[in-house]
Length: 99
Image: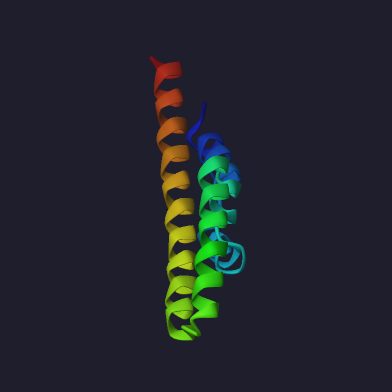
């Protein structure tokens, strides 16, 4: 496979880090599900809903803000790890084909 075709293949499979952060900001766990971690995403969503209910009932708006920012950062991290794994897998497959 040519380098250009390999690059196009990788770029087509990569996930947007920005979009993953926005998704996780509004729906915690959605970035995990989008990147293939469905069980972890569902667990994170349920835990986030429970934590949100507790924070809202305690009137801890500042804590909720920090939680939302953390969820957005977590989404970006999940997407960047996914992208790294896609690149490593594609390069390994290409090297195996050339060998």
